[in-house]
Image (cartoon, rainbow, N blue to C red):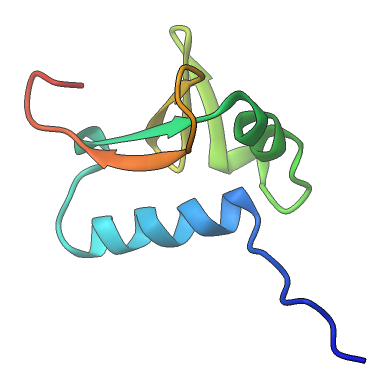
Length: 86
């Protein structure tokens, strides 16, 4: 019997997307990670995410240096933002 393919965790998915964006020359300040509340909870509780990967400063959560916005959307995504849009 074959097993269904395992879906990548939220952390794995967005780690790859952030790494690609950074490799293309985008700075973390030009990115915004918008997460559904469910995905945010999964990211916070993911045992594979190290303490160094998630930070909180001045009321802002960051994952791998990228600002995280929570809720108000139906699907999580990584957005590139222009100057003044962040």
